Image (cartoon, rainbow over all chains, first blue to last red; front, top):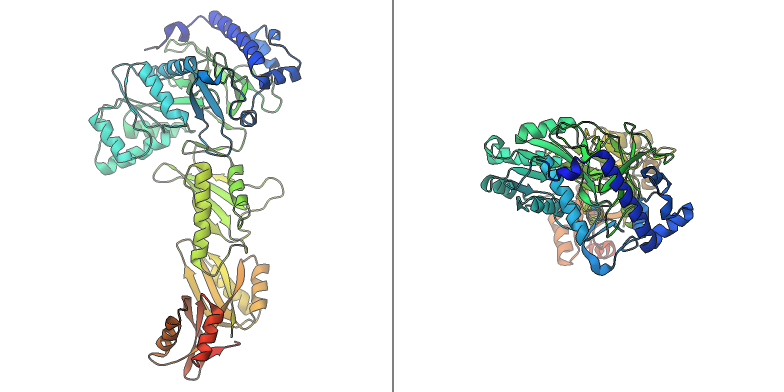
Length: 433
Length: 138
Protein backbone atom coordinates (compact mmCIF):
# COMPACT_ATOMS: atom_id res chain seq x y z
CA UNK A 1 0.00 0.00 0.00
CA UNK A 2 1.13 3.55 -0.67
CA UNK A 3 0.29 5.95 2.16
CA UNK A 4 0.01 9.14 0.14
CA UNK A 5 -0.30 8.24 -3.52
CA UNK A 6 -0.94 11.85 -4.53
CA UNK A 7 2.43 12.90 -3.22
CA UNK A 8 4.58 9.78 -3.50
CA UNK A 9 3.62 9.09 -7.12
CA UNK A 10 3.11 12.69 -8.16
CA UNK A 11 4.01 13.91 -11.61
CA UNK A 12 7.63 14.97 -11.44
CA UNK A 13 7.11 18.38 -12.92
CA UNK A 14 4.35 19.16 -10.45
CA UNK A 15 6.48 18.00 -7.55
CA UNK A 16 9.42 20.11 -8.63
CA UNK A 17 7.15 23.06 -9.06
CA UNK A 18 6.03 22.76 -5.46
CA UNK A 19 9.58 22.09 -4.23
CA UNK A 20 10.63 25.40 -5.77
CA UNK A 21 7.70 27.28 -4.30
CA UNK A 22 8.46 25.82 -0.86
CA UNK A 23 12.16 26.56 -1.21
CA UNK A 24 11.51 30.19 -2.06
CA UNK A 25 9.03 30.58 0.78
CA UNK A 26 11.60 28.95 3.10
CA UNK A 27 14.34 31.37 2.06
CA UNK A 28 12.14 34.42 2.64
CA UNK A 29 10.97 33.01 5.96
CA UNK A 30 14.39 32.22 7.44
CA UNK A 31 15.89 35.45 6.11
CA UNK A 32 13.19 37.31 7.94
CA UNK A 33 13.09 35.30 11.17
CA UNK A 34 16.48 33.65 11.80
CA UNK A 35 19.39 36.11 12.18
CA UNK A 36 21.83 33.22 11.67
CA UNK A 37 20.49 32.61 8.15
CA UNK A 38 20.18 36.31 7.35
CA UNK A 39 23.88 36.70 8.13
CA UNK A 40 24.73 33.66 5.99
CA UNK A 41 22.75 35.04 3.05
CA UNK A 42 24.28 38.50 3.49
CA UNK A 43 27.80 37.12 3.70
CA UNK A 44 27.23 35.14 0.51
CA UNK A 45 25.82 38.28 -1.11
CA UNK A 46 22.44 36.74 -1.95
CA UNK A 47 18.84 37.64 -1.29
CA UNK A 48 15.94 35.17 -0.96
CA UNK A 49 14.57 36.45 -4.25
CA UNK A 50 17.75 35.27 -6.02
CA UNK A 51 16.46 31.71 -5.70
CA UNK A 52 14.44 31.46 -8.89
CA UNK A 53 15.02 27.82 -9.88
CA UNK A 54 15.71 24.63 -7.95
CA UNK A 55 19.27 24.74 -9.28
CA UNK A 56 19.72 28.11 -7.58
CA UNK A 57 19.83 26.24 -4.26
CA UNK A 58 23.57 25.86 -4.91
CA UNK A 59 23.94 29.60 -4.19
CA UNK A 60 22.82 29.08 -0.58
CA UNK A 61 25.61 28.43 1.93
CA UNK A 62 25.77 25.05 3.67
CA UNK A 63 24.76 24.47 7.29
CA UNK A 64 27.06 22.23 9.33
CA UNK A 65 26.83 20.36 12.61
CA UNK A 66 29.05 23.03 14.15
CA UNK A 67 26.60 25.72 13.06
CA UNK A 68 23.89 23.79 14.84
CA UNK A 69 25.99 23.53 17.98
CA UNK A 70 26.94 27.19 18.22
CA UNK A 71 23.31 28.21 17.78
CA UNK A 72 22.22 25.99 20.69
CA UNK A 73 19.57 26.08 22.04
CA UNK A 74 17.25 28.30 19.98
CA UNK A 75 19.51 30.07 17.49
CA UNK A 76 17.86 28.36 14.52
CA UNK A 77 14.30 28.72 15.73
CA UNK A 78 12.02 30.29 13.13
CA UNK A 79 8.83 30.44 15.21
CA UNK A 80 7.81 31.78 18.63
CA UNK A 81 8.88 29.54 21.47
CA UNK A 82 5.23 29.16 22.42
CA UNK A 83 4.61 27.42 19.08
CA UNK A 84 6.98 24.55 19.88
CA UNK A 85 5.25 21.28 20.65
CA UNK A 86 8.27 19.04 21.21
CA UNK A 87 12.05 19.10 21.41
CA UNK A 88 14.51 16.39 20.46
CA UNK A 89 18.28 16.39 20.53
CA UNK A 90 20.99 14.35 18.84
CA UNK A 91 21.70 10.88 20.19
CA UNK A 92 25.18 11.59 21.50
CA UNK A 93 25.00 12.94 25.03
CA UNK A 94 28.06 15.10 24.47
CA UNK A 95 28.40 18.69 25.62
CA UNK A 96 26.30 20.73 23.22
CA UNK A 97 23.58 18.75 21.48
CA UNK A 98 21.92 19.45 18.18
CA UNK A 99 18.33 20.62 18.64
CA UNK A 100 15.26 19.83 16.63
CA UNK A 101 12.19 21.85 17.64
CA UNK A 102 8.83 20.72 16.22
CA UNK A 103 5.71 22.81 15.80
CA UNK A 104 2.26 21.31 15.44
CA UNK A 105 2.62 21.16 11.65
CA UNK A 106 6.13 19.67 11.98
CA UNK A 107 4.68 16.91 14.15
CA UNK A 108 2.06 16.22 11.51
CA UNK A 109 4.71 16.16 8.82
CA UNK A 110 6.83 13.76 10.88
CA UNK A 111 3.84 11.47 11.37
CA UNK A 112 3.17 11.67 7.60
CA UNK A 113 6.70 10.75 6.50
CA UNK A 114 6.96 7.97 9.07
CA UNK A 115 3.56 6.67 7.97
CA UNK A 116 4.92 6.51 4.40
CA UNK A 117 7.99 4.60 5.61
CA UNK A 118 5.97 2.06 7.58
CA UNK A 119 3.68 1.57 4.58
CA UNK A 120 6.72 0.95 2.39
CA UNK A 121 7.50 -1.93 4.76
CA UNK A 122 3.96 -3.25 4.29
CA UNK A 123 2.49 -1.67 7.42
CA UNK A 124 -1.18 -0.78 7.82
CA UNK A 125 -4.01 -0.37 10.28
CA UNK A 126 -4.20 -4.06 11.06
CA UNK A 127 -0.55 -4.29 12.10
CA UNK A 128 0.95 -4.58 15.56
CA UNK A 129 4.16 -2.55 15.51
CA UNK A 130 6.66 -3.38 18.20
CA UNK A 131 8.84 -0.33 18.53
CA UNK A 132 12.17 -1.23 20.10
CA UNK A 133 13.92 2.05 19.33
CA UNK A 134 14.85 4.12 22.36
CA UNK A 135 12.17 6.53 23.55
CA UNK A 136 13.25 9.90 24.89
CA UNK A 137 15.39 12.67 23.47
CA UNK A 138 16.51 10.27 20.73
CA UNK A 139 14.22 10.73 17.73
CA UNK A 140 14.01 7.01 16.88
CA UNK A 141 11.41 5.89 19.40
CA UNK A 142 8.87 8.69 19.17
CA UNK A 143 9.35 9.17 15.43
CA UNK A 144 8.30 5.60 14.71
CA UNK A 145 5.59 5.91 17.32
CA UNK A 146 3.95 8.90 15.60
CA UNK A 147 4.11 7.18 12.23
CA UNK A 148 2.53 4.04 13.62
CA UNK A 149 -0.27 6.10 15.18
CA UNK A 150 -0.80 7.96 11.92
CA UNK A 151 -1.44 4.75 10.00
CA UNK A 152 -3.71 3.61 12.81
CA UNK A 153 -1.65 0.57 13.78
CA UNK A 154 -1.37 -0.83 17.29
CA UNK A 155 1.96 0.34 18.72
CA UNK A 156 3.79 -1.54 21.41
CA UNK A 157 6.22 1.04 22.82
CA UNK A 158 8.66 -1.57 24.09
CA UNK A 159 11.71 0.73 23.69
CA UNK A 160 15.15 -0.84 23.57
CA UNK A 161 16.51 -3.35 26.05
CA UNK A 162 14.86 -5.85 28.38
CA UNK A 163 15.09 -8.41 25.61
CA UNK A 164 13.28 -11.27 27.32
CA UNK A 165 10.24 -9.12 27.99
CA UNK A 166 10.54 -7.83 24.43
CA UNK A 167 10.22 -11.37 23.07
CA UNK A 168 7.41 -12.19 25.43
CA UNK A 169 5.46 -9.14 24.21
CA UNK A 170 6.20 -10.09 20.63
CA UNK A 171 4.79 -13.56 21.14
CA UNK A 172 1.82 -12.62 23.31
CA UNK A 173 0.64 -9.54 21.41
CA UNK A 174 1.46 -11.06 18.01
CA UNK A 175 3.64 -8.25 16.73
CA UNK A 176 3.79 -8.15 12.95
CA UNK A 177 6.39 -5.41 12.45
CA UNK A 178 9.53 -4.88 14.48
CA UNK A 179 11.37 -1.57 14.50
CA UNK A 180 14.86 -1.35 16.05
CA UNK A 181 18.54 -1.16 15.18
CA UNK A 182 19.72 -4.06 12.99
CA UNK A 183 22.24 -5.22 15.57
CA UNK A 184 19.56 -5.35 18.23
CA UNK A 185 17.43 -7.49 15.92
CA UNK A 186 20.23 -10.03 15.74
CA UNK A 187 20.70 -9.90 19.48
CA UNK A 188 17.00 -10.67 19.90
CA UNK A 189 17.44 -13.71 17.69
CA UNK A 190 20.10 -15.04 20.05
CA UNK A 191 17.99 -14.48 23.15
CA UNK A 192 14.94 -16.02 21.46
CA UNK A 193 16.97 -19.15 20.83
CA UNK A 194 17.89 -19.37 24.51
CA UNK A 195 14.23 -18.90 25.45
CA UNK A 196 13.12 -21.56 23.00
CA UNK A 197 11.12 -19.09 20.90
CA UNK A 198 11.00 -19.95 17.21
CA UNK A 199 10.51 -16.96 14.92
CA UNK A 200 8.87 -19.23 12.37
CA UNK A 201 5.97 -19.58 14.77
CA UNK A 202 5.60 -15.82 15.28
CA UNK A 203 3.46 -13.62 13.00
CA UNK A 204 6.34 -11.16 12.49
CA UNK A 205 6.48 -10.22 8.78
CA UNK A 206 8.67 -7.15 8.50
CA UNK A 207 11.36 -5.21 10.29
CA UNK A 208 12.24 -1.54 9.82
CA UNK A 209 15.86 -1.21 10.80
CA UNK A 210 18.05 1.85 11.00
CA UNK A 211 20.02 4.30 13.15
CA UNK A 212 23.24 2.47 12.40
CA UNK A 213 25.07 1.24 9.31
CA UNK A 214 24.56 -2.33 8.19
CA UNK A 215 25.45 -4.56 5.29
CA UNK A 216 23.67 -6.91 2.89
CA UNK A 217 25.19 -9.87 4.72
CA UNK A 218 23.66 -8.61 7.91
CA UNK A 219 20.30 -8.15 6.19
CA UNK A 220 20.43 -11.75 5.00
CA UNK A 221 21.26 -12.94 8.49
CA UNK A 222 18.43 -10.95 10.04
CA UNK A 223 15.91 -12.17 7.47
CA UNK A 224 17.00 -15.79 7.99
CA UNK A 225 17.04 -15.69 11.75
CA UNK A 226 13.94 -13.59 12.38
CA UNK A 227 11.95 -14.93 9.45
CA UNK A 228 10.88 -11.51 8.18
CA UNK A 229 11.54 -9.01 5.43
CA UNK A 230 14.07 -6.37 6.47
CA UNK A 231 13.70 -2.71 5.40
CA UNK A 232 16.34 -0.03 5.71
CA UNK A 233 15.22 3.30 7.13
CA UNK A 234 17.26 6.51 7.18
CA UNK A 235 16.94 9.71 9.08
CA UNK A 236 18.78 12.16 11.27
CA UNK A 237 17.88 14.45 14.12
CA UNK A 238 19.11 17.54 12.29
CA UNK A 239 16.48 17.03 9.59
CA UNK A 240 13.54 15.40 11.39
CA UNK A 241 14.63 12.07 12.90
CA UNK A 242 13.61 8.78 11.24
CA UNK A 243 11.46 9.18 8.15
CA UNK A 244 13.78 10.92 5.72
CA UNK A 245 13.93 7.86 3.46
CA UNK A 246 12.98 4.20 3.50
CA UNK A 247 13.20 1.09 1.32
CA UNK A 248 10.13 -0.23 -0.44
CA UNK A 249 9.50 -3.92 -1.10
CA UNK A 250 11.75 -3.77 -4.14
CA UNK A 251 14.74 -3.40 -1.79
CA UNK A 252 16.61 -1.38 -4.34
CA UNK A 253 17.47 1.95 -2.77
CA UNK A 254 15.65 4.11 -0.24
CA UNK A 255 12.86 6.43 -1.44
CA UNK A 256 13.56 9.94 -0.14
CA UNK A 257 10.54 11.95 0.99
CA UNK A 258 11.82 14.65 -1.31
CA UNK A 259 8.71 16.79 -1.18
CA UNK A 260 9.74 17.59 2.41
CA UNK A 261 13.48 16.96 2.41
CA UNK A 262 15.26 18.20 -0.69
CA UNK A 263 18.36 16.07 -1.28
CA UNK A 264 21.59 16.97 -3.06
CA UNK A 265 24.87 15.16 -3.50
CA UNK A 266 27.95 17.35 -3.34
CA UNK A 267 31.66 16.94 -3.77
CA UNK A 268 32.77 17.10 -0.12
CA UNK A 269 36.02 18.84 -1.07
CA UNK A 270 34.67 21.60 -3.31
CA UNK A 271 31.02 21.79 -2.28
CA UNK A 272 30.01 21.52 -5.94
CA UNK A 273 26.67 19.83 -6.65
CA UNK A 274 27.07 16.46 -8.39
CA UNK A 275 24.64 14.98 -10.94
CA UNK A 276 22.49 11.91 -10.14
CA UNK A 277 24.48 8.68 -10.05
CA UNK A 278 27.62 10.28 -8.73
CA UNK A 279 28.86 9.40 -5.29
CA UNK A 280 29.36 12.19 -2.76
CA UNK A 281 28.13 13.77 0.44
CA UNK A 282 24.41 13.88 1.08
CA UNK A 283 22.93 17.32 1.78
CA UNK A 284 19.35 18.06 2.86
CA UNK A 285 17.12 21.12 2.94
CA UNK A 286 13.90 20.89 4.96
CA UNK A 287 11.41 22.45 2.56
CA UNK A 288 8.46 22.89 4.87
CA UNK A 289 9.74 22.52 8.43
CA UNK A 290 8.59 25.38 10.65
CA UNK A 291 10.34 25.03 14.03
CA UNK A 292 13.97 24.64 13.09
CA UNK A 293 14.20 24.75 9.29
CA UNK A 294 17.61 23.69 7.96
CA UNK A 295 19.11 24.85 4.69
CA UNK A 296 21.60 22.60 2.91
CA UNK A 297 22.65 20.54 5.89
CA UNK A 298 25.87 18.61 5.30
CA UNK A 299 25.15 15.13 6.67
CA UNK A 300 28.70 13.81 6.13
CA UNK A 301 27.04 10.62 4.89
CA UNK A 302 28.35 9.28 1.60
CA UNK A 303 25.89 7.87 -0.94
CA UNK A 304 24.38 8.65 -4.33
CA UNK A 305 20.95 9.50 -5.72
CA UNK A 306 19.05 8.25 -8.72
CA UNK A 307 15.56 8.11 -10.18
CA UNK A 308 14.07 4.99 -11.70
CA UNK A 309 10.75 3.37 -12.53
CA UNK A 310 10.26 1.59 -9.24
CA UNK A 311 7.94 -1.41 -9.35
CA UNK A 312 6.26 -0.14 -6.19
CA UNK A 313 4.82 2.77 -8.15
CA UNK A 314 6.50 5.55 -6.22
CA UNK A 315 8.65 7.96 -8.16
CA UNK A 316 10.35 9.52 -5.15
CA UNK A 317 14.06 9.90 -5.79
CA UNK A 318 16.20 7.08 -4.39
CA UNK A 319 19.35 7.08 -2.33
CA UNK A 320 21.71 4.14 -1.99
CA UNK A 321 22.24 2.60 1.42
CA UNK A 322 24.96 4.64 3.16
CA UNK A 323 28.45 3.89 1.93
CA UNK A 324 30.30 5.56 4.77
CA UNK A 325 31.10 8.96 6.18
CA UNK A 326 33.57 11.64 5.33
CA UNK A 327 34.40 12.44 8.93
CA UNK A 328 35.60 10.23 11.77
CA UNK A 329 32.20 9.77 13.37
CA UNK A 330 31.45 6.26 14.57
CA UNK A 331 27.98 4.91 15.07
CA UNK A 332 28.10 2.65 18.09
CA UNK A 333 24.83 0.92 19.05
CA UNK A 334 22.98 3.68 17.27
CA UNK A 335 24.83 6.42 19.12
CA UNK A 336 26.98 8.94 17.27
CA UNK A 337 30.47 9.02 18.71
CA UNK A 338 33.39 11.19 17.65
CA UNK A 339 36.90 10.11 18.72
CA UNK A 340 37.43 13.70 19.89
CA UNK A 341 34.83 13.14 22.61
CA UNK A 342 36.89 10.27 23.98
CA UNK A 343 39.98 12.42 23.78
CA UNK A 344 38.23 15.16 25.76
CA UNK A 345 37.27 12.75 28.50
CA UNK A 346 40.84 11.52 28.83
CA UNK A 347 42.10 15.09 28.93
CA UNK A 348 39.56 15.97 31.58
CA UNK A 349 40.66 13.13 33.83
CA UNK A 350 43.74 14.59 35.44
CA UNK A 351 45.78 11.41 35.52
CA UNK A 352 45.35 10.28 31.94
CA UNK A 353 46.93 11.33 28.66
CA UNK A 354 45.01 11.15 25.40
CA UNK A 355 46.91 8.11 24.15
CA UNK A 356 44.19 5.75 23.20
CA UNK A 357 42.89 3.32 20.63
CA UNK A 358 39.28 2.39 20.03
CA UNK A 359 38.56 -1.11 18.80
CA UNK A 360 35.03 -1.81 17.59
CA UNK A 361 33.82 -5.28 16.83
CA UNK A 362 30.61 -7.25 16.74
CA UNK A 363 31.01 -10.28 18.92
CA UNK A 364 28.78 -13.28 19.42
CA UNK A 365 26.06 -11.00 20.74
CA UNK A 366 25.98 -9.13 17.37
CA UNK A 367 25.96 -5.86 19.28
CA UNK A 368 28.77 -3.39 18.87
CA UNK A 369 31.47 -4.12 21.38
CA UNK A 370 33.75 -1.22 22.05
CA UNK A 371 37.12 -1.52 23.71
CA UNK A 372 39.15 1.53 24.60
CA UNK A 373 42.84 0.91 25.16
CA UNK A 374 44.47 3.47 27.40
CA UNK A 375 48.17 3.56 28.12
CA UNK A 376 49.22 3.32 31.74
CA UNK A 377 51.14 6.48 32.59
CA UNK A 378 53.57 7.06 35.44
CA UNK A 379 51.09 9.63 36.69
CA UNK A 380 48.51 7.05 37.69
CA UNK A 381 50.45 3.83 37.86
CA UNK A 382 50.48 2.28 41.30
CA UNK A 383 51.92 -0.79 42.98
CA UNK A 384 48.37 -1.70 43.98
CA UNK A 385 45.81 -3.22 41.61
CA UNK A 386 42.92 -1.49 43.34
CA UNK A 387 44.32 1.92 42.41
CA UNK A 388 44.46 0.91 38.74
CA UNK A 389 41.00 -0.61 38.89
CA UNK A 390 39.79 2.67 40.35
CA UNK A 391 41.17 4.73 37.48
CA UNK A 392 39.76 2.24 35.01
CA UNK A 393 36.35 2.63 36.56
CA UNK A 394 36.72 6.39 36.48
CA UNK A 395 37.45 6.37 32.73
CA UNK A 396 34.57 3.97 32.17
CA UNK A 397 32.08 6.06 34.15
CA UNK A 398 33.14 9.39 32.63
CA UNK A 399 32.85 7.92 29.14
CA UNK A 400 29.45 6.48 29.88
CA UNK A 401 28.38 9.91 31.06
CA UNK A 402 29.77 11.55 27.93
CA UNK A 403 28.78 9.03 25.26
CA UNK A 404 25.81 7.29 26.79
CA UNK A 405 27.24 3.86 26.06
CA UNK A 406 29.34 1.44 28.06
CA UNK A 407 32.88 0.98 26.80
CA UNK A 408 35.28 -1.72 27.94
CA UNK A 409 38.47 -0.11 29.20
CA UNK A 410 41.72 -1.98 28.74
CA UNK A 411 44.89 -0.67 30.33
CA UNK A 412 47.93 -1.25 28.15
CA UNK A 413 51.66 -0.74 28.46
CA UNK A 414 53.01 2.64 27.38
CA UNK A 415 53.98 3.10 23.75
CA UNK A 416 52.00 0.00 22.81
CA UNK A 417 49.64 2.26 20.86
CA UNK A 418 51.22 3.15 17.59
CA UNK A 419 52.43 6.73 17.24
CA UNK A 420 52.41 8.21 13.81
CA UNK A 421 53.80 11.40 12.37
CA UNK A 422 50.56 12.70 10.95
CA UNK A 423 47.11 11.82 12.13
CA UNK A 424 47.30 9.08 14.71
CA UNK A 425 45.26 5.99 14.03
CA UNK A 426 42.70 6.11 16.78
CA UNK A 427 40.07 3.69 15.58
CA UNK A 428 40.14 0.08 14.46
CA UNK A 429 36.72 -0.87 13.20
CA UNK A 430 36.47 -4.62 12.71
CA UNK A 431 32.74 -4.58 11.97
CA UNK A 432 31.84 -5.65 8.47
CA UNK A 433 29.53 -2.82 7.53
CA UNK B 1 64.47 0.84 57.60
CA UNK B 2 62.61 1.49 54.43
CA UNK B 3 63.30 -0.54 51.36
CA UNK B 4 62.73 0.58 47.76
CA UNK B 5 60.41 -1.67 45.83
CA UNK B 6 59.90 -1.33 42.10
CA UNK B 7 56.52 -2.02 40.53
CA UNK B 8 56.18 -2.61 36.82
CA UNK B 9 52.96 -2.59 34.79
CA UNK B 10 52.56 -5.69 32.63
CA UNK B 11 49.88 -6.56 30.13
CA UNK B 12 48.76 -10.16 30.19
CA UNK B 13 50.64 -11.29 27.14
CA UNK B 14 53.32 -13.77 26.35
CA UNK B 15 56.92 -13.03 27.12
CA UNK B 16 56.56 -9.85 29.11
CA UNK B 17 57.80 -11.30 32.38
CA UNK B 18 60.67 -13.05 30.63
CA UNK B 19 61.68 -9.73 29.14
CA UNK B 20 61.74 -8.04 32.53
CA UNK B 21 63.94 -10.72 34.05
CA UNK B 22 66.28 -10.70 31.05
CA UNK B 23 66.63 -6.95 31.32
CA UNK B 24 67.68 -7.26 34.95
CA UNK B 25 70.02 -10.16 34.26
CA UNK B 26 71.73 -8.47 31.31
CA UNK B 27 72.41 -5.45 33.49
CA UNK B 28 73.77 -7.42 36.43
CA UNK B 29 70.93 -6.50 38.77
CA UNK B 30 70.24 -9.08 41.40
CA UNK B 31 66.66 -9.91 42.35
CA UNK B 32 65.91 -10.24 46.05
CA UNK B 33 62.16 -10.59 46.12
CA UNK B 34 59.48 -10.94 43.45
CA UNK B 35 55.71 -11.15 43.38
CA UNK B 36 52.94 -10.53 40.88
CA UNK B 37 49.50 -9.14 41.52
CA UNK B 38 47.30 -10.22 38.66
CA UNK B 39 43.87 -9.24 37.37
CA UNK B 40 42.01 -10.48 34.30
CA UNK B 41 43.70 -7.98 32.01
CA UNK B 42 46.95 -6.90 33.53
CA UNK B 43 49.50 -7.63 36.22
CA UNK B 44 51.70 -5.59 38.49
CA UNK B 45 55.13 -7.03 39.04
CA UNK B 46 56.65 -6.02 42.36
CA UNK B 47 60.29 -6.61 43.02
CA UNK B 48 63.10 -5.76 45.35
CA UNK B 49 66.65 -5.79 43.99
CA UNK B 50 70.14 -4.67 44.89
CA UNK B 51 70.14 -1.53 42.70
CA UNK B 52 66.58 -0.11 42.71
CA UNK B 53 67.28 3.28 41.12
CA UNK B 54 69.24 1.74 38.29
CA UNK B 55 66.52 -0.83 37.75
CA UNK B 56 63.80 1.81 37.63
CA UNK B 57 65.68 3.87 35.05
CA UNK B 58 66.32 0.76 33.01
CA UNK B 59 62.62 -0.10 32.93
CA UNK B 60 61.63 3.38 31.94
CA UNK B 61 64.20 3.50 29.16
CA UNK B 62 62.69 0.29 27.84
CA UNK B 63 59.12 1.62 27.74
CA UNK B 64 57.81 -0.01 30.86
CA UNK B 65 55.76 1.97 33.33
CA UNK B 66 57.64 1.57 36.61
CA UNK B 67 57.69 3.30 39.93
CA UNK B 68 59.38 3.07 43.28
CA UNK B 69 57.37 2.50 46.45
CA UNK B 70 58.67 2.18 49.99
CA UNK B 71 58.13 -1.11 51.75
CA UNK B 72 59.54 -2.84 54.82
CA UNK B 73 61.68 -5.99 54.80
CA UNK B 74 60.90 -7.65 58.11
CA UNK B 75 63.16 -10.36 59.44
CA UNK B 76 61.03 -13.17 60.83
CA UNK B 77 62.12 -16.33 62.54
CA UNK B 78 62.03 -19.26 60.13
CA UNK B 79 59.88 -21.49 62.32
CA UNK B 80 56.17 -22.05 62.96
CA UNK B 81 54.60 -18.94 64.40
CA UNK B 82 57.37 -16.64 63.17
CA UNK B 83 55.13 -14.63 60.85
CA UNK B 84 52.18 -14.77 63.25
CA UNK B 85 54.21 -12.95 65.88
CA UNK B 86 54.87 -10.00 63.54
CA UNK B 87 51.31 -9.92 62.30
CA UNK B 88 49.93 -9.80 65.82
CA UNK B 89 52.09 -6.83 66.71
CA UNK B 90 50.97 -4.94 63.61
CA UNK B 91 47.34 -5.88 64.17
CA UNK B 92 47.36 -4.78 67.83
CA UNK B 93 48.74 -1.42 66.77
CA UNK B 94 46.26 -0.96 63.94
CA UNK B 95 48.73 -0.99 61.11
CA UNK B 96 46.98 -2.23 57.98
CA UNK B 97 48.80 -4.46 55.55
CA UNK B 98 48.17 -3.77 51.85
CA UNK B 99 50.10 -6.85 50.75
CA UNK B 100 53.09 -8.96 51.64
CA UNK B 101 55.32 -11.50 49.97
CA UNK B 102 58.44 -13.51 50.73
CA UNK B 103 61.93 -12.63 49.66
CA UNK B 104 64.40 -15.02 48.13
CA UNK B 105 66.93 -14.48 50.89
CA UNK B 106 67.47 -16.33 54.11
CA UNK B 107 69.54 -15.01 56.96
CA UNK B 108 70.58 -18.10 58.84
CA UNK B 109 67.51 -19.24 60.77
CA UNK B 110 65.58 -16.23 59.64
CA UNK B 111 63.56 -15.26 56.57
CA UNK B 112 62.81 -11.85 55.11
CA UNK B 113 59.19 -10.88 54.39
CA UNK B 114 58.32 -7.81 52.33
CA UNK B 115 55.44 -5.76 53.78
CA UNK B 116 53.50 -2.89 52.25
CA UNK B 117 51.58 -1.14 55.02
CA UNK B 118 49.31 1.86 55.14
CA UNK B 119 51.53 3.83 57.51
CA UNK B 120 55.16 2.94 57.05
CA UNK B 121 56.65 5.31 59.65
CA UNK B 122 54.30 4.13 62.35
CA UNK B 123 54.97 0.51 61.44
CA UNK B 124 58.74 0.96 61.66
CA UNK B 125 58.45 2.64 65.05
CA UNK B 126 56.27 -0.14 66.43
CA UNK B 127 58.49 -2.87 65.04
CA UNK B 128 61.55 -1.23 66.64
CA UNK B 129 59.76 -0.94 69.98
CA UNK B 130 59.00 -4.64 69.83
CA UNK B 131 62.54 -5.58 68.88
CA UNK B 132 61.55 -6.86 65.48
CA UNK B 133 64.41 -6.36 63.03
CA UNK B 134 63.96 -4.93 59.61
CA UNK B 135 66.39 -5.10 56.77
CA UNK B 136 68.12 -1.94 55.49
CA UNK B 137 69.87 -2.99 52.37
CA UNK B 138 69.68 -5.96 50.07
